[in-house]
Image (cartoon, rainbow, N blue to C red):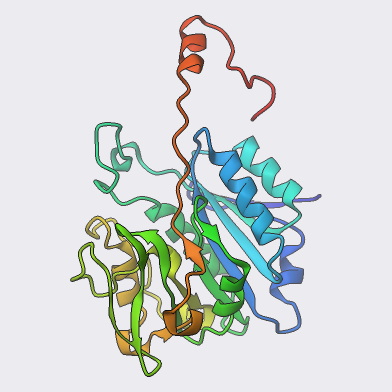
Length: 281
């Protein structure tokens, strides 16, 4: 497979699969542009592999994967090439001062901001409003039904739906009356203008391109990234409830358990190679 590579003036790296233009210009069919930030960790390959198998079942999907790294890793590059999916591979490192340290809470600093913005920048640079497209943010650890992707194809501006296992609830969902969103059942910081998870909405490409200021910000309070981003795109009254008026759960905010690799630590202390030496890159 030939990969087309171009480099920008920053430290972003672009890799685009040759299948991409076939998907994007697919006779006017709606293309879903899925944005996935990812970073190196023991479960990364397992998470991305599971996501790959889901996306292979979704027609007209273009996967934009953004690594939080200084350069493209062999692991992610190989996985994408072997997937045969239509994809763009970008690289955007998070500055050390913005990374969450081991002694800091999960929400102490915004995560994935630069990576998602790098993907949005690529979209603005390479896609036009004439392309029928939908933008969706899919983290690599969530669980997605195929029905979700068919639902979001109906998006006119911004669509919204419930997300399971998030915000300390079985489901965090919009409240819908007569086809309109009238509120939310969120328990965590319910005063947010849009108390929704990143997996709980999609944006039409045309609408996004019409909003030049729409992007994520490091100045957002912890847990407010989604709300602040949506505030730049839409009003509550304009939201389009999907999933049978938000009565069905089609995506879950799952997370893999952090593996306990105590014996790998012992191998390292003894100056020995890790157990997966030569197997994972």
